[in-house]
Length: 163
Ligand code: GDP
Ligand code: MG
Image (tube, rainbow, N blue to C red):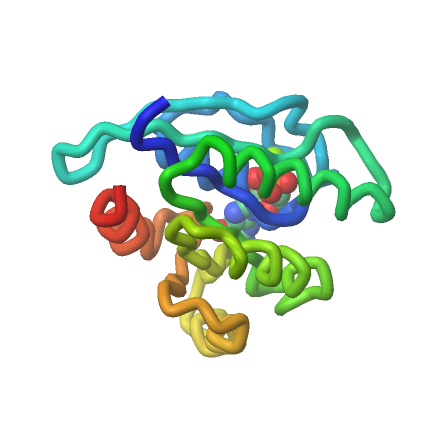
């Protein structure tokens, strides 16, 4: 698949919500209990006249905390093998977790463009809080709300620029 964007990140950060917003339909299952996406799901979208595919790599079965790392590793593996651009999704409401730092370490070693997207930035206070994610050290860091769509234009501008 050419022009493929992969969304990686730990459970519950909003990968499926972002995926559905970008493709404009509800293909991925969203749930407050993390890990309900059964397998990776592909969708298609267009931005600034550029067509691209997107994959929601998140979640294989319902799981407990101790399998999070295994899951993340398979997501990153899929992203490394298949994607042209990787969106690393994180959650402003939890701040940077240990698992986020582990994913950041894995992605730093990847020879593909990585965009950090801080999700759930629904309001101004959360914009201020989101600044902590600059410390992950990725030059391309964006803030957005997959719920309201705020900030999604800037993210997609960058994505298609990198394809
Ligand atoms: P995934 O496990 O990473 O695929 O996460 P989901 O897409 O299933 O979302 C997990 C929860 O976060 C759901 O309750 C979503 O409604 C919620 N969520 C996703 N994006 C946002 C956002 O931008 N703002 C807020 N406030 N909640 C969000
Ligand atoms: Mg999901």
